[in-house]
Amino acid sequence: MDSNKIGKFIYTLRKEKNLSQYQLAEMIPISRQAVSKWERGVTIPDSSTLLRLSEIFDVTINELLNGKRLQENSIENLESTTLEIIDQHNIKKKKDKRIIVILGTIIFILIFSFLLYYFITSYSSIKVYKVGGTNEEIDLYDGLFIVTKEKAYLKLGKIKNRTDEIIKINVILKKKNKEILVYQDLDIDEIIIIYNGYNECVSSENIKYFLNNSFLEIVKKNMETERIKLIFKRDFVNNNFLYNTKKNIDKDNNTYINNESNEINVIDAINIIKENGIYENDSYIFTYKNTKYIYFDNIELLRIITEDNNTMDLFVKKKQYICSSSAKSNSQECIKYTKKYIKKTKWNLISSTKNQ
Image 1: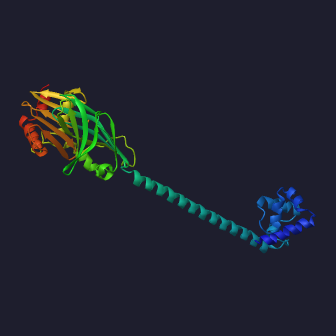
Image 2: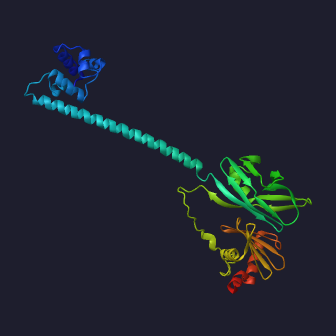
Image 3: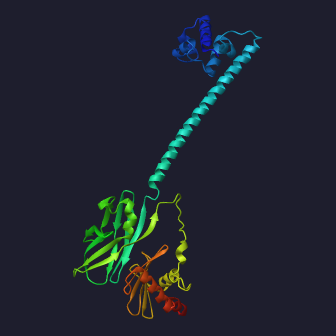
């Protein structure tokens, strides 16, 4: 289909009708500039305009598209023109489809790149820990530690002191043979902001070290000091693709304190204390035969105070125990001592609840 030939034919037809470009444009109606473009072969009239031109000039659409008058028996020319129009339409349709596919691919790549970047930068970027700790005289509870890629926020929570008044607190990090003062204040309820790279000891790369080697030092009114190892229990991390309101069952819940006897189960003991004990200050207290069992719910710590006033603190963490005792010097000895004591008493909690 020759646009120049069509344009010249329209020009010839217009002259035969003694019409100016303005007059022809008003009859369609269309702008004079559009008529000028047809006659110069720049553009071709659309389908509705071709119909109007065929009425004005008393020619067929096929004659307009061929750029000349056709004989009635010019079937080959007619078919050729029709096929040419179909071919051009198909070519344009394929071109448009190709453009849509390319644009769709570009949009998909951009969206995928953004999601990938967001996933890399945000996955496991926020961790929340519950903070607590305890010794013979002081209990720390309701603490919170929030770790992001840029900052870490520590709120120590509340202190239950059974002796002298507290006048100052220090947060200390043990690093090799050194002790680094991370924070010092008179108010335990302040929020401590720990910047990455602070003293090169609590950067994002060393957060795990901070979780395992930090202590709370408490200065009392009589100027004596007490130290509590800070215990961090992870409560939340944003590492799920989909939010799930259902809590996952901990496979380690059935870990036994005493591997020699299946009668002694940490979870069973804790459940008995919670069901039969008195709830006070975020802890469950249960007493039986001069032995006191205390479970601190917020930090998952089980305390046993024996009839001879020995205190055993057993913090239950996934696949490990952290234990301290007034009778034993280190954690391993404390765990063994706790196991022997529970085995010796045949777990009085179970027998006592059966008799109630």
